[in-house]
Length: 85
Image 1 (cartoon, rainbow, N blue to C red):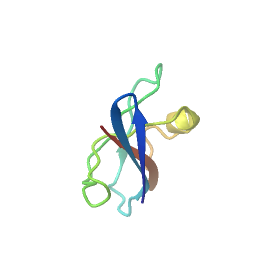
Image 2: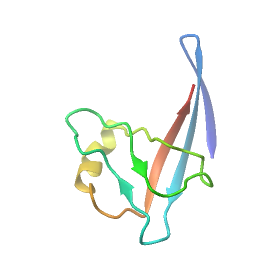
Image 3: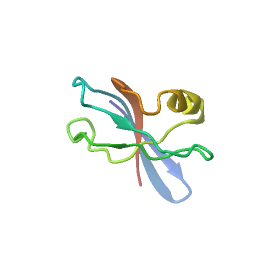
Image 4: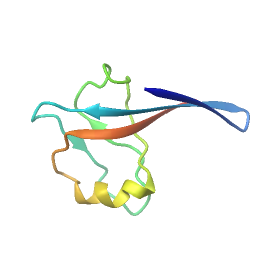
């Protein structure tokens, strides 16, 4: 994993980049139901503590259409960015 420290105003923002892979059929990523604005949260029913102890995900505009297409479908991996302030 790669860690970046970025100074945003007077707040230090740490970004963690990585890939979460899901091996079981029951591992599903649930997407937001509305896409009229840039979605920011993806909730999962699986424990990601072993990956990065993540509870939310940031979705870039580049991947927005891909997330719309895959909404409700099974996914086997996701790229994530964890932001801690």
